[in-house]
Amino acid sequence: APSVVVESGMTEDGWIPVNPLTLETRFADVYAIGDVTSVGTPKAGVFAEGQAVVVAESILARLREGEAPTYDGHGICYMEFGHEQIAMVDAITRSGMARLAGRSSWRAIFSCATELSICPAAIRWIQRRV
Image 1 (cartoon, rainbow, N blue to C red):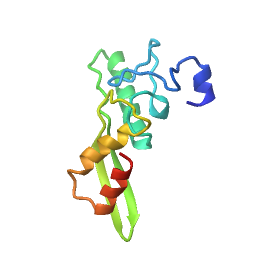
Image 2: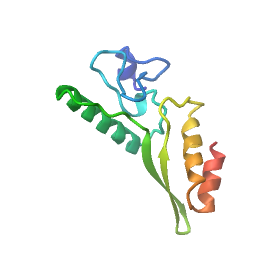
Image 3: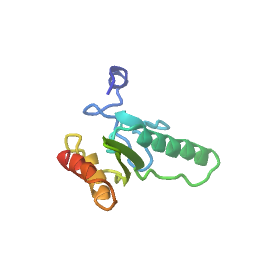
Image 4: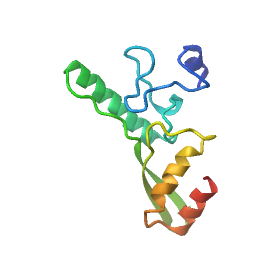
Protein backbone atom coordinates (compact mmCIF):
# COMPACT_ATOMS: atom_id res chain seq x y z
CA ALA A 1 0.00 0.00 0.00
CA PRO A 2 1.18 3.57 -0.56
CA SER A 3 2.87 5.19 2.44
CA VAL A 4 -0.06 7.56 3.04
CA VAL A 5 -2.35 4.54 3.44
CA VAL A 6 0.08 2.71 5.74
CA GLU A 7 0.55 5.87 7.84
CA SER A 8 -3.24 6.15 8.24
CA GLY A 9 -3.17 3.09 10.50
CA MET A 10 -5.74 1.26 8.37
CA THR A 11 -3.46 -1.47 6.98
CA GLU A 12 -2.53 -4.95 8.14
CA ASP A 13 0.36 -6.63 6.33
CA GLY A 14 0.25 -3.90 3.67
CA TRP A 15 -3.47 -4.20 2.85
CA ILE A 16 -6.62 -2.54 4.17
CA PRO A 17 -8.77 -5.39 5.51
CA VAL A 18 -12.35 -5.14 4.31
CA ASN A 19 -15.47 -7.21 4.49
CA PRO A 20 -15.27 -8.87 1.03
CA LEU A 21 -19.01 -8.50 0.43
CA THR A 22 -19.57 -4.93 1.66
CA LEU A 23 -16.05 -3.43 1.37
CA GLU A 24 -16.45 -1.92 4.85
CA THR A 25 -13.32 -1.47 6.93
CA ARG A 26 -13.11 -2.01 10.69
CA PHE A 27 -13.70 1.74 11.08
CA ALA A 28 -17.33 2.88 11.23
CA ASP A 29 -18.62 4.37 7.97
CA VAL A 30 -15.28 3.88 6.18
CA TYR A 31 -15.00 1.81 3.01
CA ALA A 32 -11.96 0.90 0.93
CA ILE A 33 -11.78 -0.09 -2.73
CA GLY A 34 -9.17 -0.95 -5.31
CA ASP A 35 -5.60 -2.14 -5.09
CA VAL A 36 -5.12 -1.40 -1.38
CA THR A 37 -7.83 -3.78 -0.16
CA SER A 38 -7.61 -7.37 1.02
CA VAL A 39 -10.63 -8.39 -1.05
CA GLY A 40 -8.60 -10.73 -3.28
CA THR A 41 -9.65 -9.65 -6.77
CA PRO A 42 -7.14 -8.89 -9.54
CA LYS A 43 -5.54 -5.46 -9.37
CA ALA A 44 -7.31 -3.99 -12.39
CA GLY A 45 -9.46 -0.92 -12.83
CA VAL A 46 -12.54 -2.92 -13.80
CA PHE A 47 -12.62 -4.51 -10.34
CA ALA A 48 -12.09 -1.18 -8.54
CA GLU A 49 -14.94 0.30 -10.59
CA GLY A 50 -17.24 -2.57 -9.58
CA GLN A 51 -16.25 -2.03 -5.95
CA ALA A 52 -16.97 1.70 -6.23
CA VAL A 53 -20.46 1.01 -7.56
CA VAL A 54 -21.21 -1.30 -4.63
CA VAL A 55 -19.95 1.24 -2.09
CA ALA A 56 -21.91 4.11 -3.68
CA GLU A 57 -25.09 2.04 -3.83
CA SER A 58 -24.55 0.88 -0.24
CA ILE A 59 -24.28 4.46 1.02
CA LEU A 60 -27.43 5.43 -0.88
CA ALA A 61 -29.27 2.36 0.44
CA ARG A 62 -28.26 3.27 3.97
CA LEU A 63 -29.52 6.85 3.55
CA ARG A 64 -32.77 5.62 2.02
CA GLU A 65 -33.13 2.71 4.47
CA GLY A 66 -33.01 0.24 1.61
CA GLU A 67 -31.17 -2.99 0.98
CA ALA A 68 -27.46 -2.69 0.19
CA PRO A 69 -25.90 -4.71 -2.62
CA THR A 70 -22.93 -7.02 -2.13
CA TYR A 71 -19.72 -7.26 -4.12
CA ASP A 72 -19.35 -10.39 -6.23
CA GLY A 73 -15.90 -9.81 -7.72
CA HIS A 74 -17.15 -9.70 -11.32
CA GLY A 75 -14.94 -8.25 -14.02
CA ILE A 76 -14.10 -8.59 -17.68
CA CYS A 77 -10.52 -8.59 -18.89
CA TYR A 78 -9.23 -8.46 -22.45
CA MET A 79 -5.86 -9.89 -23.48
CA GLU A 80 -4.17 -9.26 -26.82
CA PHE A 81 -1.70 -11.88 -28.05
CA GLY A 82 -0.69 -10.49 -31.44
CA HIS A 83 -1.30 -12.20 -34.77
CA GLU A 84 -4.91 -10.97 -34.61
CA GLN A 85 -5.64 -13.07 -31.51
CA ILE A 86 -7.49 -11.64 -28.55
CA ALA A 87 -9.24 -13.17 -25.56
CA MET A 88 -12.03 -11.93 -23.37
CA VAL A 89 -12.21 -13.41 -19.90
CA ASP A 90 -15.43 -12.81 -18.02
CA ALA A 91 -14.46 -13.72 -14.46
CA ILE A 92 -16.05 -13.77 -11.06
CA THR A 93 -13.34 -13.94 -8.44
CA ARG A 94 -15.04 -15.18 -5.34
CA SER A 95 -15.08 -12.86 -2.35
CA GLY A 96 -12.75 -13.90 0.42
CA MET A 97 -10.46 -15.89 -1.89
CA ALA A 98 -7.09 -16.55 -0.27
CA ARG A 99 -4.20 -14.56 -1.67
CA LEU A 100 -1.31 -16.84 -2.71
CA ALA A 101 1.62 -14.60 -3.62
CA GLY A 102 -0.60 -12.66 -6.01
CA ARG A 103 -1.57 -15.77 -7.96
CA SER A 104 -5.02 -16.57 -6.58
CA SER A 105 -6.65 -14.17 -9.01
CA TRP A 106 -5.16 -15.97 -12.00
CA ARG A 107 -6.47 -19.28 -10.65
CA ALA A 108 -9.99 -17.82 -10.71
CA ILE A 109 -9.54 -16.41 -14.21
CA PHE A 110 -8.10 -19.69 -15.46
CA SER A 111 -11.06 -21.63 -14.13
CA CYS A 112 -13.36 -19.31 -16.04
CA ALA A 113 -11.17 -19.22 -19.15
CA THR A 114 -11.21 -22.98 -19.58
CA GLU A 115 -14.96 -22.72 -20.13
CA LEU A 116 -14.63 -20.09 -22.85
CA SER A 117 -13.77 -20.41 -26.51
CA ILE A 118 -10.57 -18.40 -26.47
CA CYS A 119 -7.35 -18.78 -28.40
CA PRO A 120 -4.83 -21.44 -27.29
CA ALA A 121 -2.23 -18.72 -26.65
CA ALA A 122 -4.50 -17.26 -23.97
CA ILE A 123 -4.78 -20.60 -22.20
CA ARG A 124 -0.97 -21.07 -22.27
CA TRP A 125 -0.40 -17.51 -20.98
CA ILE A 126 -2.81 -18.05 -18.09
CA GLN A 127 -1.43 -21.51 -17.28
CA ARG A 128 2.08 -20.08 -16.89
CA ARG A 129 0.75 -17.79 -14.15
CA VAL A 130 -1.12 -20.45 -12.13
